[in-house]
Image 1 (cartoon, rainbow, N blue to C red):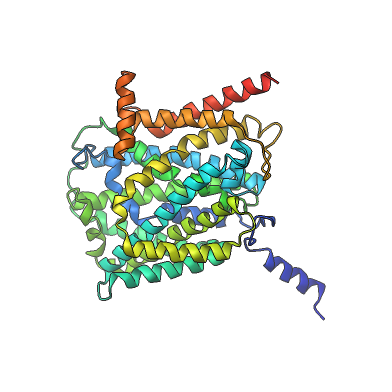
Image 2: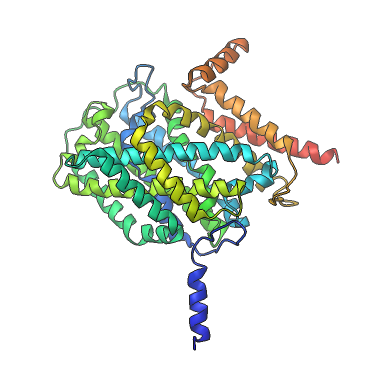
Length: 450
């Protein structure tokens, strides 16, 4: 006969993993260090190396305009601001136990939440595909003895397996992967600073806020998925601290390392991996980064499934993640994601002002007072949609992006309004403030009219 203790332990084990559908409550099992390790690992990405040049405010020809030192400072400022915003996105999930897209039912209404959900699914599928391509290309740089498609399929399988046991994967990151990543980072810092570095101060600081905005945007990219994980946090305070500090610290460390590597290859971003691979034992320690990159694709695929559950609450997340893992693997085999990167950045930009609306209404508006209705019949809240649209407009007026027709529309709007973006303007930060202010004003006007 099974003892009461054994039954209780067995029950605890069954509740230690994410439920299969949204109809079941989310277990509150992730402590501060579990979450910190998760966010810290997401902060260390191969993109922090290959994309480090973006914080140097490259011009239209791709030539960096900021000196390395200015880029480091801009990156640190942008990452710190982005980390605080990420923490704001993380706390509501811990308080309510709801994933990110379900939170939007309370912000916009059930039916209106479907639009940002579809956008989020589109960007996550794109980024998940991008991550498999990054992993395969980096693995080929380590050893090109097998065809590229082999690495893509292996990465896709690993990603899919991780999504089947998401909370177990988060705990595994804390216990094993985080320590290996920290050792690799320390090793490469020691090796790279011993190399003869060029002058890191030469150049103008004129594009400082452009560089800061680039780093801030990378942090913000995790905002639409933060609550998917923090809904399992034991406290909102722990969720905020783990996301804002854990992610920011490691992103700064990784980007500084990437900028040092970039300086060693004279700013040629296509060769930024060379300084890592050319040092003693570099291949071994770089392999740690390549394997660790799977947590990026894991987060993208798992959160895609959870986002889809906002549309189909009774869908089994296991079925969804297996289908999605297979799908992005196929896409990674046939697509050139470089043609899609600008579109992904455009989609991501709409979530920056959305966070402003969410933070204002959840912490200072209806969420603080009456609480949000996050049921499947939550009424539409067009005022919050209007605030979101104002924030989107503010972002695009400052930074129209590079998607040709979309950018042309906002450039024409700039001309019509005689508006010229200034170098000190951060599209992410200002659109966040515009959206948050609009949400507060509209919320108060709505309550006063009742």
